[in-house]
Image (cartoon, rainbow, N blue to C red):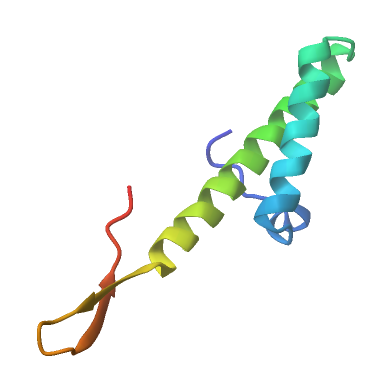
Length: 83
């Protein structure tokens, strides 16, 4: 399933929307009241939502810049070192 592409309806979600849906799926799975097929479908969708959220976080990390001010007052930016 690692090679499965993320569907458009998930790709179009914001990080917050995807995370909220993922939390809902996890809550339903934790209750254990789903039929097996529904639980498997929920797990598969949850995996795709997780991948989407991770990609969104990586994009955000890459956009954050480290701002530096030299002793002469010159301001510069460089990619942030966020892990």
